[in-house]
Length: 160
Image 1 (cartoon, rainbow, N blue to C red):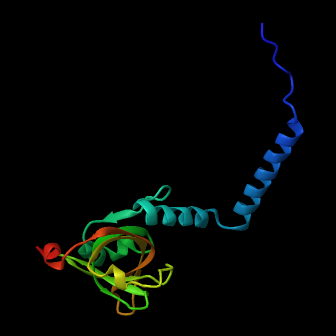
Image 2 (image 1 turned 120 degrees about the horizontal axis):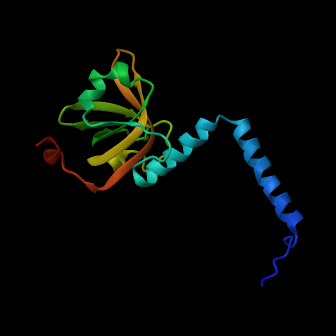
Image 3 (image 1 turned 60 degrees about the horizontal axis):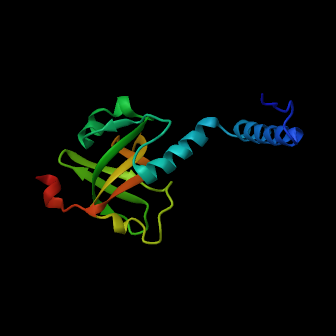
């Protein structure tokens, strides 16, 4: 017959460790909006793997759907994919397109490398962001995260 000890050695130490971890987690979630932490994690995961863990953004298959469904998509997170047609030299915006239209993607919330958005030209991007309305009512996407194909796709193949 096996004799099990009634107490773990240094049980108080483990209890104090758990209490400290619990208090830190409570303090961190109380001091900030819990949703912002989850959005940050989703943005990081989307940048690495092209999908999200917690949030379920709407997948828009054609850019024309953004222009036609602005009322339904406004202020919601969406994922859209397109070929980078134009990129700003300082990394603040890109214009993506597909066979149905073009869309401005604002990158001001992203920290791009020194090359900026120039290295993105003619590449296919998946972008996670919030759809907003511009000055003349035209939609633009405020990007939270990007996931790029490493392969360069020629424009002629995209429009065919």
